[in-house]
Length: 200
Image (cartoon, rainbow, N blue to C red; front, side):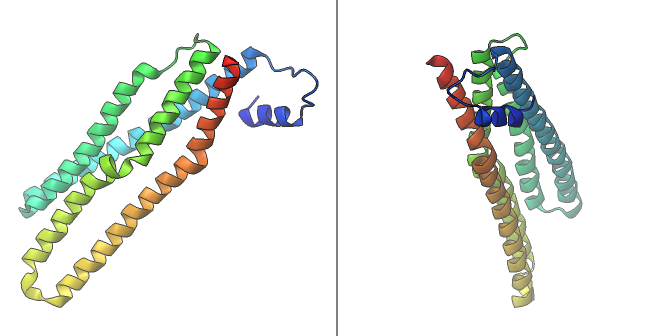
């Protein structure tokens, strides 16, 4: 039974009569949702880490070919993002619940994971966007300095590039904040409510 079906059963149930919802069914549903979130996060992180490695290699290559120091700054930013995600995933292993964990332990492990994801996405500017943005500013600044003799046309092209990068970064930030609001916050509230009901 899926979480939506459990929720529908709960909403359709006459709450004056006892609900036939066993602890085992609830535990299985919590574990299934937890595994689903873990799988989603694993593949998201794997994609991001692979992209960070590829971009690091590309910008190091561009730096070697073009001789511009600014490409190395972008490479360091990309490397930082990949390394941060890899280390974060490694540190979060200790919060995983085992398959034989109790209902309370499973809910707590899920809640820890959701809280951590909320923290990551709310702070995405500092650990993800800013390191790459610093590199992009270095590239744009270096290009503007090299083409300063070309005048206004060169600056207009760089200004368009700056606007494009800003919109791209802002769009990424906005999408992550929306994911927190629409997906993670409701999940956190459900888990907190469920945990509180076990304590009472």
